Amino acid sequence: MGWAVTFIYEMTDEVSPADVGGKAAALVNLAAHGFDVPSFFILGADAFTPSGLKAQAKRDLIVALKGFEGGPVAVRSSGRDEDGVEHSHAGQFLTVLNVAPQHIPREAHKVWKSGDTENIRSYRASKGLSNADPHPAVLIQTM
Image 1 (tube, rainbow, N blue to C red):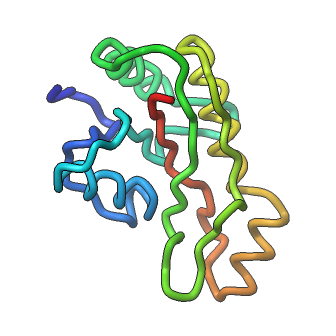
Image 2: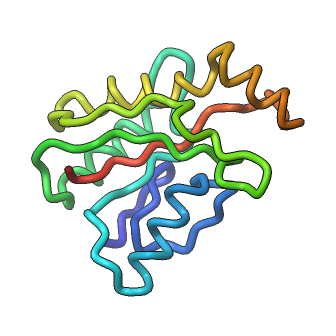
């Protein structure tokens, strides 16, 4: 689609797990190798503030949704330190299913905020990971 946006990664972009998380990077890789992956895009962790999406991220999301299949979506986390040899964060972050497009900003913010809980901080500390920025990137994917 070639979006001219700042905070969104397409499923066809070259990505780094450090930017979009292990789950999102794996899905991009699968799609690039011809696997039938349900359509998705990724909101970078830097798209959010504690109170919600940044103004430019809101504009980017509007553009991204225009080129998207619509319908209910899954709003999923993609931890930027997950899926390593020593740690996975599996089940640690929030996932919200069957989200209507108009509710994506609110639910995406909830998923992002789920990276800053006491459980996540304890898990990260037990694995020797920094708690400086524990928030995940957020996948928006068709159901």
